[in-house]
Image 1: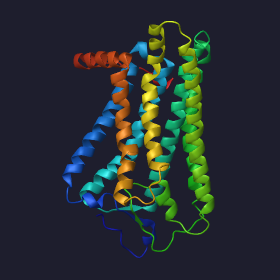
Image 2 (image 1 turned 45 degrees about the vertical axis):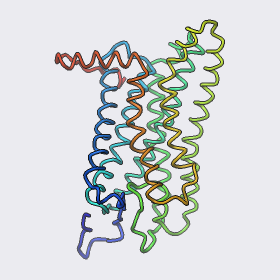
Image 3 (image 1 turned 60 degrees about the vertical axis):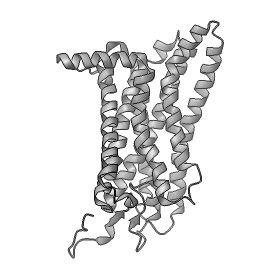
Image 4 (image 1 turned 180 degrees about the horizontal axis):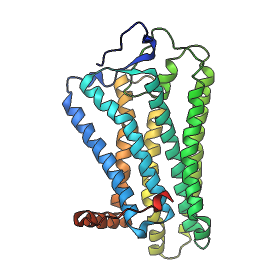
Length: 326
């Protein structure tokens, strides 16, 4: 465990202890190796999707534009949490400053909220493509796609900053320096403060609920209209082709919100701390790894782009594209 800084001028109350998976301390390198492999697969898989879309002109469409932003969010999301988790496997309890803890919580909340909003934008794109195909090019212009993506990023980081700002006037509780988790999640962070925490707790729950429930309702509504439109297609082949364009996104939504419900909605108060942390691993570690796998296995266009990308890499002919940043 990293030693706390010493010296008369150092404010010791600003240092916290992340317990991590202390129960697995005896295993050390086994969980470290496993989660390091998962982290490399997650970052590498999402980076490959970004490169594949950037290098393939056939994928320069709104759906894959949003997919690139989603992959970038996943890279930032997992990189915010997993390195701390890997250190905990080797060192056990880890000292972390209050400022770093709050920053980790802010990045975690912001990126998760942005992912929810971006998933809803992707479902809206699928709704327009299937239910209003004649108006789709005009309604999903490059400018409007950029606005939706920027709005997801900006909203996620702005609303999360509001929650964090409510903690500024609150004092730390004396003696509360231990966080029985492997990262600074919302509930452990709120538990560090004394005074009137009701405002911070209520605002955090309300904002996170709005940023997750509202996009989910939009996704459900979009797919209700999509399903109605698909069922009206006379041929079975036409129905399969129309709905196949949504299968990857629908799978990602199911994995994302499924693990979200297990971690934050299911009753876990009476669970053992190790089991609660294990459920959190589903949401913070395995879900970001599953998304590039889903898109690479279920989407033929992405699979084709990845094959072409591999050919370009082996021939040293990969050219970058600025379309993603447009």
